[in-house]
Length: 480
Image 1 (cartoon, one colour):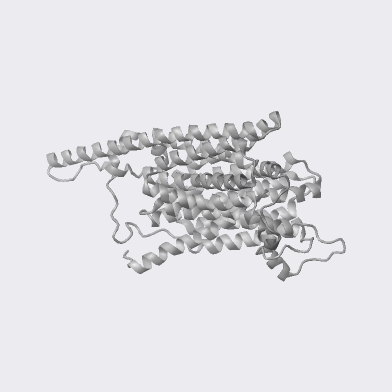
Image 2 (cartoon, one colour):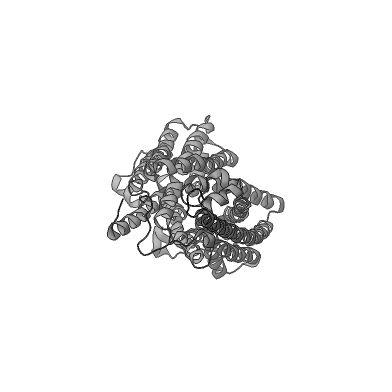
């Protein structure tokens, strides 16, 4: 199928718009904390009871990425992302009906499992589609595709906190115009909201509609399509070979990439999980936001700054990795993050808090741009959805280890110091793992170069290419 340059350019950019739309909606999962207090006040639940819902959501998200990735590779991103939007919206609609004081399991089932599955189905599709449309800018476009996920909580948390407030005792309710103004972050409301049930219904409808709208812009390029004027480098230079997940998992490179992801993400989640209480204790109740900013003041608070730079970091490090390569960018990023965590133990001034929030967010966000790009670099785009689903299970492990270990270290010492020192050490370990990834990637490229030389020799002997294995086939046979 032929495609003109102009049509190809429009298709490429529309995919980015769709990816950002989907990811902003899915990224609201990171603002789970806004549900905690309303549910605890409504039902008298303790903190452990509510936190299990978040754990179920993260675990299900990571696990479902595997079958969702495989389905995306087979039927395309649009249908799979639409399924994700329907599941995410359904989780909130069912939660409004089923969740009750005696049924915390209903929150685990709806928000945790059904909602987590919806995020898993939706998350992989924008990344897979974008990488296939932009083989010339994999790092940058992976960062753009996931930037919305990092920023979703920032746009959601403030308005949601207001709307989740109970209605007035007299039964006075917000009008539709006021709900819209609060939802857009323009108004701070009048001290009352619509209650958690009505909010679940509203949010469920918005989630389903937003994701389905973004999904209409997602599509895979025609087979064999490549950007005008761009020629891919040979496999013997890039180390790229199309593998299925079984072949990929049988390589040391995939295993080391997975471990690097675990160490890097665990350190980040360990710190970010305690960012708000730590920064609050350092600021002693002070605020960065002037009164005139109103509801937009949340954008310049420590958590808001971290979220903004979390999104920016995905684009920034993605672009850096295009200029250098993925492992070197990982090494630089984790070394910088490790040093930042070590310096946090002596942070005191408000300026230092601002810089630390920006620096940690910038580096943590980069993780989610570099690993999908690296997966595509080393194992091809043909089975990218499922392959990255397996690599992404590392985030599921980190999602459990990071918050739990960080919480235990704080409970034991009643200080943040040890948690941040440990997070810094994990970053240095991740940087060391990135060096190993770099060596293994170069070894894979060298093996592909040897396979290419063997193929050429065989073709000379046979007089043509009939019956000669391809470079990729030669390497895959070795990987098996």
